[in-house]
Image: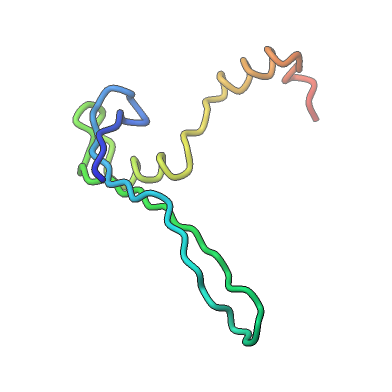
Length: 92
């Protein structure tokens, strides 16, 4: 199914994504006899749009951000550490 999502970088541009829901498949192993089959699950998300109309990020960059998630900035990491009661200057 084709869905429209917001760009993971600018949260403004509309990106078209082909989303295939989770599918389960039974695969026989290299062993024989009465041992159970291995269940494998797959989920696929593929970006259709070539680039973001707002921030001009490429299809590969958007695909990577959707797959791995966006890394927080150093300021965001320090802010979250302070909120948790940790002092980032005293970590070793």
